[in-house]
Image 1 (cartoon, rainbow, N blue to C red):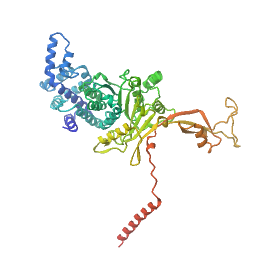
Image 2: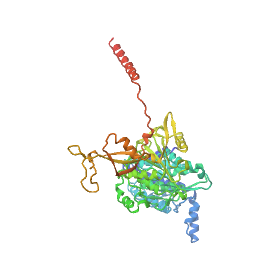
Image 3: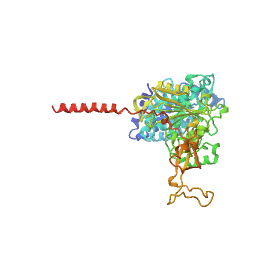
Image 4: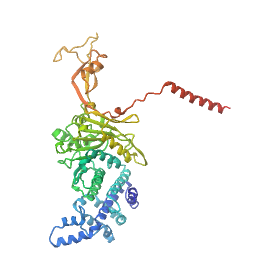
Length: 580
């Protein structure tokens, strides 16, 4: 059964809830029950052996927990003699038995159901006289790993979350990223480390500060397992949304990960993994979301800790916090002398150029480029995400750049690489095919200027090419006779008084001498002008589209005239036919 069909089957439980639950509340029942049935199926083959072991160890006066984990073959157990089908055996006590069954799971699993507020939903279903029917429905679904793989289960969770988000008028994109975008990011993350990642027994860490349902972590794990079955990826994440956190944690639990590495909370105001540094990181933070709610905590950290904290380089405007996640990831990089890190982050167009010289955004870009952290930026097609059709970009950063990338930034325009989806999902109408992902990965791996059909699709720039100085041009005040007004006292005595109405600024590329620029571009038009050097600011911006713009000259007038004449002649002929 496909993941879409299975999701539809699970969502059919909504038919039972209609009337007692609002549409926007269906997910609060369907999501935790899906997780419960999955865990129920995973433990089913070893259930009898675990209970037997428990009895044996308790008789011997030993703590049975470590022995039970070993018997179950998982990182969690359930010590209740019940399972979901047995809970239904006593129809008068389904509520008590179901809650007792959930309480018998390992603490990490109980935390998942606490995040879902499962006990509250059980009480509500019981009062509505729906608990038996809903439990019965889920007990009949086969969610065993032999029938539904971990990868497929991940897709099922994402589809359920998407349905839930649509009915709740929430943004699906807040919870997960399209799988093919993640595959591209994972390819870009790992391609330069293929040799190291193919060694037997290699262990690497991966972190997602906006983990959602764990899609990025799962796809990275699949990639590494596929390329090197002997490799191990230790996964870490933090998530703000309780339902997404619970699903992510359940998914990691079944994959055999240490679920204490997945934490609940706001990454920016309360870093749940403060001392950790990672080999690889991936993130798709929310686009253009303001950070006013956590402004006090963020500004306090920036002021108190400066560059020893996360936000030393600068703070973006409150209306868009995406660059705060970029700074957070930079702070999580393993030092270069300890092997360094590489990370990928999805951002919209705003962080490329918003903010003039000296602004928070410009200072963050300056920090990234002057420290040679930027490897590449890839422009994705529009209409790629579930919640927005705007242009998006994948930034790849590393503090262990290979020799051929040092001092260089690669820009890849992949906006034309897409295929139309058979069926749109929200705002998502386009997708990357495996061939597109391979082509983009090859462009990144090649790290060279490339054209397709005479149009550039990969360009290389020096870090300083994105820098500029904003210089302030002053011109003097003049009196009624047109004479220059000069200061009568102070340090500026005898100097021309600047006229604020005539003040102007110019952006001069870092690669160009300011005085040479001033003599060439300003003095011929304003011979009395001068530069106020005290007001000069350094800025950085990445005008991505400008670097890929190809001028197409207009067609010759004679050609246009001939075309118009042809159209006019046809119209005249048609009118003539009508009048006959």
